[in-house]
Image 1: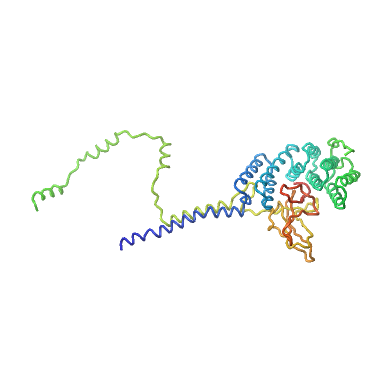
Image 2: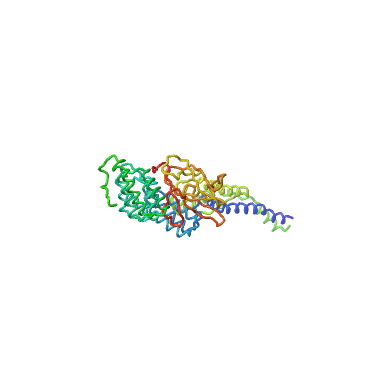
Length: 230
Length: 197
């Protein structure tokens, strides 16, 4: 009788201890599941995640915006792209963001910065991108011309043709609406079957007729001389 | 009882008067013995590392385990990510208008897709999550639309269109194209609030 009670008494203690240990063991699992819900990077394999986090940390340390890098990662994840490919693409964007700042200076807004990086990735050389630097100080915003430039290249306009056309309009002080109008016109021409490069050159000639040189610039000395051959 | 045994018992029962100075002598001898000297740092380490029994009731053990679980959950609730987003904080939808430039943060996206069974708006403003921003089919049929609030800036987006041929990712035909994204998907760009950030 006595012996029996001695044997039974540890059972509740043991059970309670097992429950406590089980709960403690479940805590990391719960945290992991929750992390997958709230932290999309948790869907990367550990090595790729580590590589992406290194890029994000480097960007943060250099004062480069991390939002475009995170967004690119999430885009790859949502497209079910191979993790190594995601890492390569994000690293490429990081490099372009760094280069864009070197070329255009540190006073870029985030939209300008991202647009400049993507223009570099589309094949525009840093030397051409640097031509946008002059009038940027004249308070013109770079995002729209760069978005239009990237679009034109993506639609098949040769990089040199597209670059020189947009630089020419930029140096004349074209406004966002001018660039948007140019894009819309060229897009319609391309859809109607015209050669992309020829369509752009025609539209630029028309646009330049409507934009007096330096119309948006406060200081004419800030302008680059126009090159009529372009 | 045997007298010899009786004597032994009596002797054993006889109270012994201890020498009052014995205790003092013993303690003096102990104090006189050289103690190994330990530095305060070493003593602290020894205190930290020395194993000792910890008495804990089952209820106490359960409370400790529950506390650890609670700390884990609470930590998770306030985690801050590298992009500055905090777990508990609602994500703000970004704004972009297919027509540029605009200065509103409310943007309507429209896609004509008469044969689609489902269309979603995906972009950097909803972490490219196809279930985050479903588009509504207009009563007349083939047009899908959705209105979202977007923060000023440049946004990249696309439409995920589901139909009888599966799901396709398409760019907005009424907006500028973004350069190839590295993953083979076409995307569009919208600037909200002009090109200012």
